[in-house]
Image (tube, rainbow, N blue to C red; front, side, top):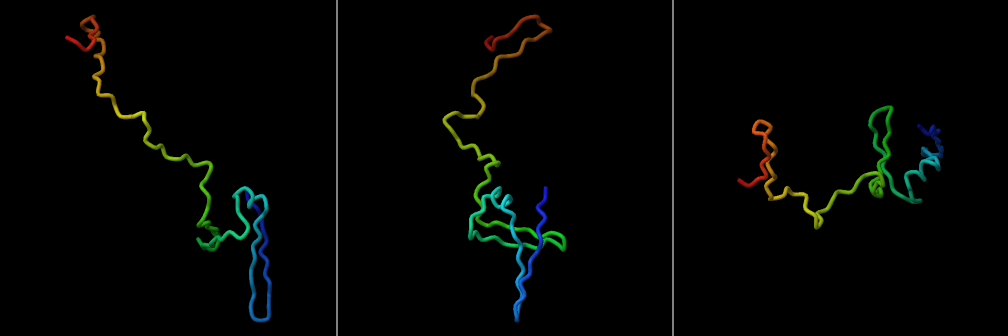
Length: 95
């Protein structure tokens, strides 16, 4: 879903300034703060990217797992041997 927006141009005697308004719904969805600094980047003649250098962390991205008291390393215990269908008996790891 896009947010159509018209460009505005303010013409002065010796210069002109262009404005792009950010729709309120979009600003609220992105948690923008008044006075926040953003950067424009030109991708090509049809795409202008708004970069946010000081963006807050995304609530959708998962945080990396930290080492905890529970280890995920393989156990040093030897697993019991699987049943051998040819011999008809089950071995439990000890001879």
